[in-house]
Length: 88
Image 1: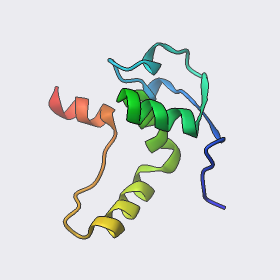
Image 2: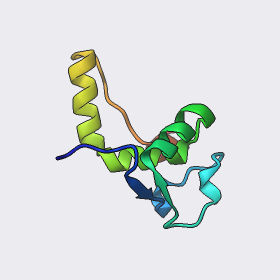
Image 3: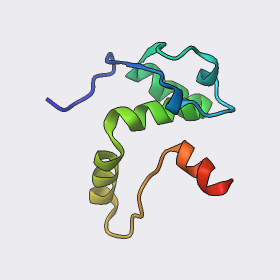
């Protein structure tokens, strides 16, 4: 319970979309497996895929796991939409 499988499917939402990624052009509701999203995120630097995975895992859970692995000096992850809002 509480674990993702590589075969689990995740649908794109409007909030996931980040320009300059391949998945940004896919219709809302298009579904990809976790394995496909990991591949797109790592091989293609697809930020929409990264946002979909962050949303699926949960930002709070992701940050808690990373902090446990990296120690108290870890500041935290964010999603790419938040980065764009902060920059612009």
